[in-house]
Amino acid sequence: MNKPVVVSEETLTEPVVVADVAPAANAAGPAYVVLAGISVSHFLNDTMQSLIASVYPILKDTYALDFAQIGMITLAFQFTASLLQPVVGHYTDKKAQPYSLAIGMASTFFGLLLLSAAQQYLVILVAAALVGLGSAVFHPESARIARLASGGRYGFAQSVFQLGGSFGTSMGPVLAALIVVPFGQGSIAWFSSIAFLAILILWRIGRWYAPQIKAKKTAAVQSHPDAPSSRRVAVALLVLVALLFSKQLYVSSLSSYYIFYLIDRFGVSTQAAQIYLFIFLAANAVGAFLGGPLGDRFGRKIVIWISILGALPFTLALPYAGLYTSAVLSVVIGLIISSTTSSIIVFAQELVPHRFGMISGVFFGVAFGIGGLGAAVLGKLADHTSIAFVYQVCAWLPAIGLLAVFLPKLPQHKR
Image 1: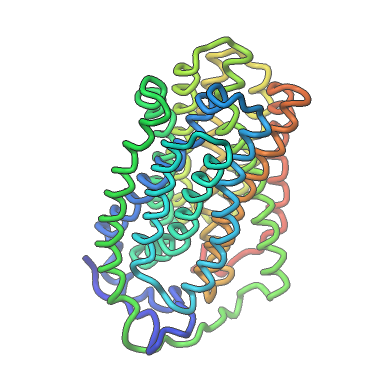
Image 2: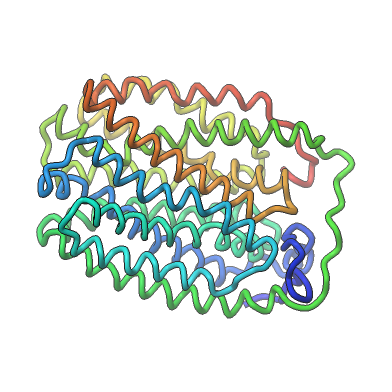
């Protein structure tokens, strides 16, 4: 599918340094088959994950759950992903595991089967945690594979990778509306076939990845003379985490509670609300794809500035809009705010290129963790106030984008 890229040596105890192996891959350009495979796998993975939030109304009615308990389901799912992703990334920096993706997907497979048969709240939490475990294994190493296959177009490759995940997330509500709502909780088991298909694809990608991590020892990472100091790198990483916080918590508020918000305020049906949620998530998918190539061309810092602060006027207007205006605003918000994801992740990877897997795991993990913790806190807030009040509070989150002023300018070849 592409020329082998030499990554590490001997027992693979040295860090897997992607930045040093790019030239061979760059000459041949992106490995499009690999990028397509990892993006499709991301689509399948996140489709299954999004089913959890999409079936919340069914679980809430069936088991008489309150909003705080709904938030705890999200927390159980995302806590395992958040806690384990940096650990997985750190381990694979030292010793790459080409078949770990397929093995991790098996956790998602069993989690879906358990969720479909769960009759108790505790079992639902365990099932959600198993799906989160699969995500923890999937994201750090698949992000590394996307970069290896990028041919030097790192933002583009990250966007292709993110595109699959974003569209997968948007498909959850549609599939829930078409299948789970009419046929009930047991129909979730049907989606285990998606997990099995993902296992097959990831196993094949693992066979491509294995030769990339053999043979010669890579050269040590040489710092660019214009690279920021270690102190500025540390400050920049904290800023990027804060920016991801503002973006992800806002998206989490819409993803977890938008259905309830539309039902409570406008009296729409559950299925209609799921379609509106799909529209928002689809806009997120398009925005996530556009952000990477724009960052490659114009610089990641400017894309981060525009994508977070640019969403603020629209998020402030959303709580006061009517039904159809809300749908339009959700599309605009999704397009703008999600375009920052690829730029934030690639920016962080370029700040610390010798710890690529760990940084990817930290940022994917922080995204999941913030979403899970935020969903639980927002659920508790909604129980004591209202869903409408939650959206009024969350509307100010993009203002955190002002912190982008503290991001350093990276060397010209690392835009």
